[in-house]
Length: 109
Image (cartoon, rainbow, N blue to C red; front, side):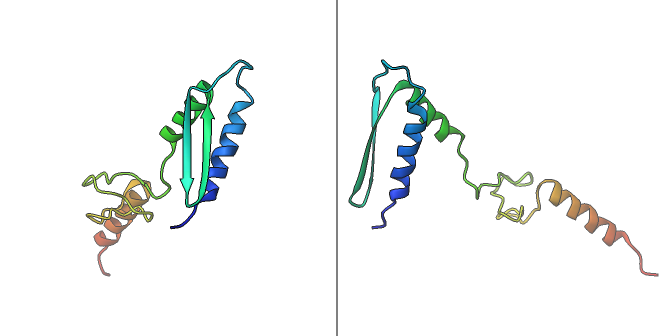
């Protein structure tokens, strides 16, 4: 099993960064435990820290998620091409399609 101490360290840094803004009388409202191999981290979260964690998790997006295809609704790859139908999406796709149409409309002299 691969161990991910960086996740535990990241959580430690996150909690420390938020905790300094807690009022002095803040008390934990929940705990989170991370385990990775033999490593464990247990974190007691105040209301502020719990809210910050919820917000961070809700706003995170996978860097490989380029969205949905505007043609078929499939997943778009990093090249902005749909993995299902091959349609090029966004301004890049529109530019390529426009250029392809102009090239196709040319007549041989």
